[in-house]
Amino acid sequence: MVDKVVLAYSGGLDTSVIIRWLMDNLRCQVITLTIDLGNQPKLEEIRARALEIGAAKALVVDARELFVRHFVWPALRAGAVYEGQYPLATALGRPLIAKLLVDAAREEGATAVAHGCTGKGNDQVRFDLSVGALAPDLRVIAPVREWELKTREEEIAYAQRHGIPVPVTRESPYSTDENLWGRSIESGVLEDAWQEPPEDVYLWTRPVTDTPAAAAQVEIEFREGVPVALDGQELESLALIDRLNRLAGEHGVGRIDHLENRLVGIKSREIYEAPAATVLLQAHRALEQMTLSKDQVRLKERVAQEYADLIYNGLWFTAHHQDLAAYVASTQRHVTGTVRLRLHRGAATVVGRRSPESLYDKSLATYETGDVFDQKAAVGFIYVWGLPVRVQAQAQLLKHPDGLLGLTEPQREPAR
Image 1 (tube, one colour):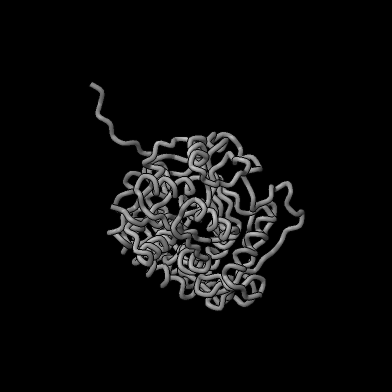
Image 2: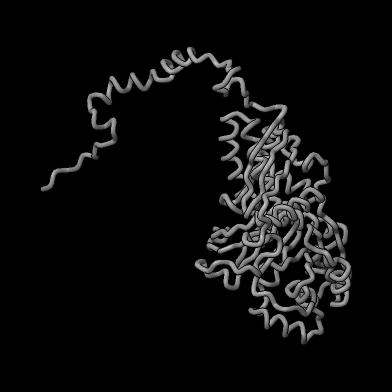
């Protein structure tokens, strides 16, 4: 028996219909929770709509700072990019929303939480697993997986029959989600993988043909892997991301066209806009190349992939994540310095980097005056390094010289 449910409420058609559906089908009180992750400019309007539909209470939370501090920056320090392309904006927001849903349920005495995810996407997994980890006693309700409303038109008809006020806007042909770290766009013509995305898909980035002719340069300062300043000016996290989104977007940086492997086994064509994320991830990677050893960089690349998969697959609240996060935090102790990038015609290019903890030593790398590298020492190094190569060549490979060139073929059974 469910007496009270806390619903993650965006104010759109799906979750507006869900309020009434929960009231009618479960005979319960519905408390809505609207969370701003940088995507909800009309919080009070959304709150008023929830109450008008019949919500017993409508809660509003500005979680932008929490989102950046505890989710975005850790993912940036990890270098987490799903399948080498997706900066995980939507995926990063889901565990925080789940955490706030659980907190609200505890405070309000609810025995269940609800969300508007479909049974076909990744977000249902992220919500369900996160709630299950944080509050296994709470029931998770996903009406879209249960009800008989199969199309948008059927949902609109349901809303009209029950007097549910929904915003009357020009229907977008796309399904979108956004927060301050990026936008996700799918459906419509994008489902044709051969079709070039039309310009009306994009909101944050200019087309390359409409970007400034002159390149822009930006200097990003990091402290222990976290960006703290742009062009020498220290900024709060939200202001820094916002400024970079605008600057990089003006130069067409941050468009991503990804044929993605969803967790549920479907390949999906996704378009992303992530100007700030694209620039910050590139700058952070460049600074790591300067401040981490070769072995650290190579292991961290493997950890970054694991970290990205973990986020994408809804496993944020796990011991595995805690272990990976501890390793990542250790790697970032010396990732301090400044990276300069050129933004031009849709590309962000690293053109300079410096760090007080740099492992790059010009006096060792230079071929000019001031070279301190003892080139004579290379003879002994090469002799020792090449010892196993010579031993194997003499014992095995020189007896079969064609093998040294990779020309041998596997032995086959003679024809009978």
